[in-house]
Length: 382
Image (cartoon, rainbow, N blue to C red; front, side, top):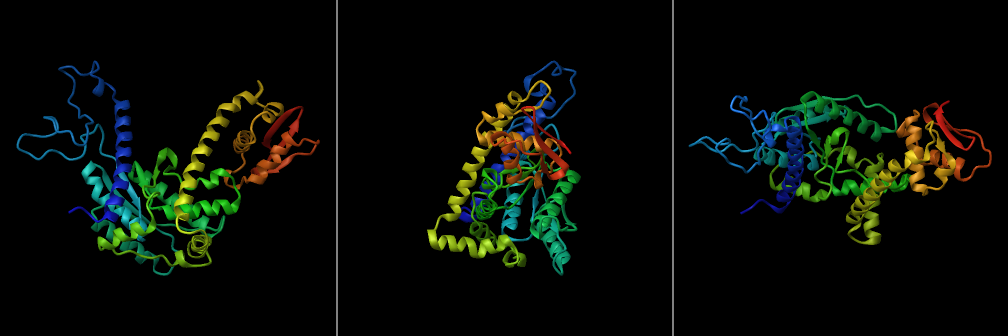
């Protein structure tokens, strides 16, 4: 008899991500020493013995000694990749940690965990120590707890998120991890889409969280197609203790109000399926946004003159969605902080092209100034 359907679902999601990481890992290894796969000049009788990257299910004389158990996993050019799970102790991340602990050794992947103590609640250090213990009991190694200082920029939720990702980045660098798994579910994705819609920030905000993000694709989100109840059920049937963060039910936080008031109200008014529809909207929006970003990147050289200045007439001829992406990128390259550059700023710059009436310069975050001069759009430090 196989595992419970909820357990099977989370394991399959993690297995797919690990397969992707292993394929990337093998590709990097082959690029590093291409002669090992192609039989180059180095493969002579005097060449030093070296291991080869092989399929996880391959058993050859090189991968198994006579009379011994075949090696599971991979015999790679370098040590097997390390994958960390970011775990708060909640149901989503504990389910993720359990699935990683089950799948990783079967695929020859090293698996560890990190929990971040935001130090925002009494006894948070004890809670973090409990999470470390649970991760070790699952067989993960290395495991560590990292305490962070949460600032105030952008509000409490944004500040905590920034501190958490900074800590996870540092942990990944410290351990040489190939990836960090995050337990965001389809429900989290739906909430993110609604928050983006409320901000009115455009199609990129509606695209929600990416399955792969961060520098070099560091962050992976296996559960974006799995609902929160499935993750919780997987913990229950495996007898995994979970911790429910009181902040997740605190109405002082926007996401908490959306989760416990906003989404239930939408489902009551529109019927079941709202979460699934919002998650589907996120994927469709991401596909569209990626296509527009590519178009803007390809079009940008054609709207610059020999000196690199943006030509207003050529910008005017582009579709608004493409033109505004070029303007945003130019503002960021000039020194405007991406996190402080809002849609209204780009709209004001756009009016220098589409609604030119001799208006003055536009002041942007980061002391960047945009002005129209002689048919050119100049965006630079003020």
